[in-house]
Image (cartoon, rainbow, N blue to C red; front, top):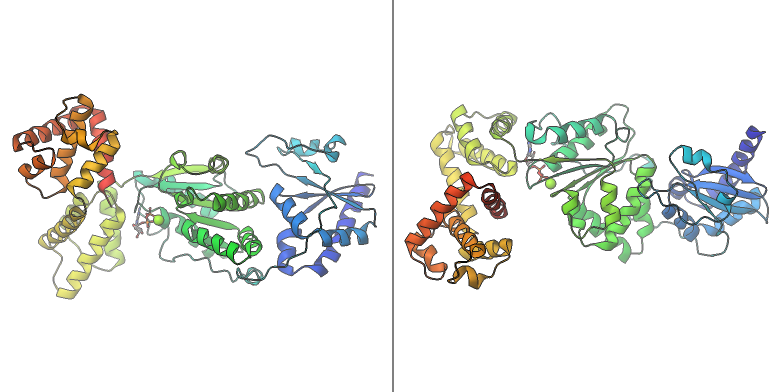
Length: 487
Ligand code: ADP
Ligand code: MG
């Protein structure tokens, strides 16, 4: 009996599909109808299961007439359609449910960790069926000719592993081997500028694409590009294609999601795409320059999604890792560099791998050009010019602004006479940073702090130096401020 019922619903849905297939493009069929699961047939009521609320709304908005036609054919004029929706696992609250649930029979779903909801809104809205125009060439999907926008130079084999990135690398590698079957979905990699986030997530994509049995569509996109595509899609009235395009991807890599901060509409769209991909078992990989909890201007419901999988950070590399990265780069460029020079560079440039690489490459280029071996002097000269270049952009005013901002005090106070501790310490730290980042003399620094003399500046610098060693809070403040001056 049970089997008979099963067959009925399957057969009826098959009949429906045969009508639908004739009335929509193949792309739309694949995107919007293949994922539908025929769920139940109760008398003349066909209940289909769709992956998300959004999906349901989309069908209702765009395909209502075709569905009616299909139903007329498969069941008859009095045929009815209802939907059940797999509720987002992150939002366990059930939405109001008319008919189907009251007829119970959704228990099997709940046992699987899902809840099903019924909707009986059909049929009433009549919307024109709009077929995709084609900016996001959906045909390419069928021919597996989607450009993944990956940079082939980023791989796991040229990514140097260290304590600073071990977890992020391991998780990335696991995802690359088994996209969407690990619990790392979504995978979110975060860390400062130039620490290898893009390299790592691109390595995931490249690895998947290289698998011999690869039939997955990988897409790498920066959040900036995603945003501008979205805006264009609205302007050109092709949002439907935009959505359909992203929903067809198997592995979506979205770089620098912090860029979506404050962009409500783009976030909302990404939220729908995210849900759809996640619910249909697709892999999502993201990067951010800060941990999710510090992403301001980001919708809570989106942030909560980010926590479903794994969040792994990348820290600045330690000395050994920096040495290994340089060696790696030198080897890649088929160049030669003395141990001594490598160590010198690794000591000098300690925060940003991109910068480190930049110095190494420019040294290699110099040496090729001048036919001179890279020696310590050459390295010193390079590092010096880079440090000077960095210093140029940091003015004393910028330091004062940054420090007052950081400690939430007023510029007039830091330059003024007050001896309040809340002001004295920031003032001393600002002087300390001025010495570190500008070429100003002690006298000149004193001048910028309300005409103090140079011995006051010396005292400030020494005090901060001592505090950094003994007072963790102060050390932390100084470090955070220094980070703000790094490029
Ligand atoms: P992010 O996206 O975090 O700003 P990138 O991935 O663009 O940083 O990395 C900057 C540069 O440093 C890239 O050229 C990258 O190949 C290199 N890089 C970063 N980390 C590593 C690493 N662990 N091993 C090898 N190269 C690295
Ligand atoms: Mg990047």
